[in-house]
Image 1 (spheres, helix red, strand yellow):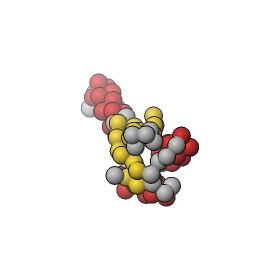
Image 2 (cartoon, helix red, strand yellow):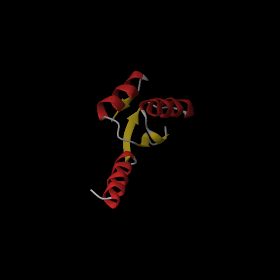
Image 3 (tube, helix red, strand yellow):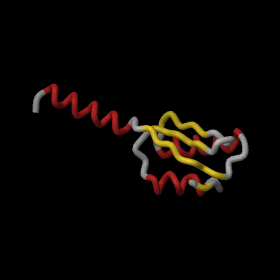
Length: 81
């Protein structure tokens, strides 16, 4: 494997880590709810996490397991729709 191949493999790995995910979360009612969801996702290792209580849309980047994300959100009292 040449140097070019190593760089390509590393770049592909970085892209997988940066994959964006979007989920719908019910039960958020305010900015504090948004903050709690974002903080929980960041604790799991997500980056660029954001939440919108008005639309229920939560987005983040990373390679988190769906079950871990759902559990973290459920632990806060919210649900993944």
